[in-house]
Length: 281
Image (cartoon, rainbow, N blue to C red; front, side, top):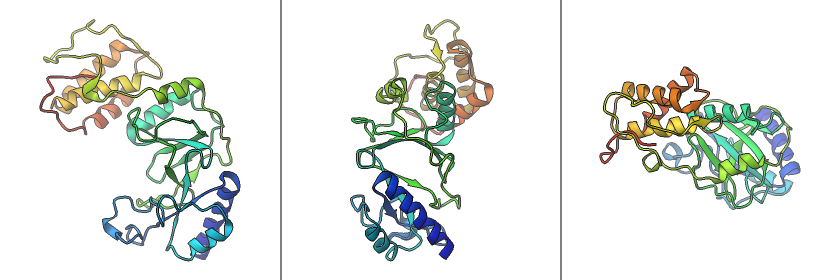
């Protein structure tokens, strides 16, 4: 326990020196429940600040005081103007696929400070992007942490038992490429609100769609399309058939079959929409 406390304080000091502010989050008890008053009923174990989101720590004295009051704490890093960072939070199968695609396109650079989350996701830190909403989910598998937000960071524990770790500390806090900012500021339509509509009758009508999706747009397009079929109440086999056909005809180059399977399984979790008449993206 002493060793963990020493490592914890070392990282807390590093964050204070580099970013000027940290948050002390409630931690996890031995059974994985949150150490906050809600305990096992807490919906965000180990992920919310002791004393509330405004209880930002900026000085060593404040840190030492907080550490005496919180049992097995986790560390949080405020996002937005306070620390000068915006964080891209990639999570789940769709997030993993999107992260890898943006890496391949050069939108996420190798030197950007990047972390592995305890839940299997990825955090990418960039210089603060003013005006970018932290409340809007722009793309499947991606959340934005900006003004008023935070990320849980190393060496914190996740309820899975995994530890948050940096992939390339100290890395660099780079300005996000203009092309990346454009993608982040373009809201993604919900699966039932997209522009292209399909009536699925058991066969895919070739040539019905004229748009071709290049790298950087393929994952999102196939995911929306698959969600349309999930919303229409179709079986996972039907969703898989439609998504594969859409990928072959409208993605350039087509995504690999393994990635389509990941997207289909993610989309299939969407509940059926009684008003849906078929697949829509």
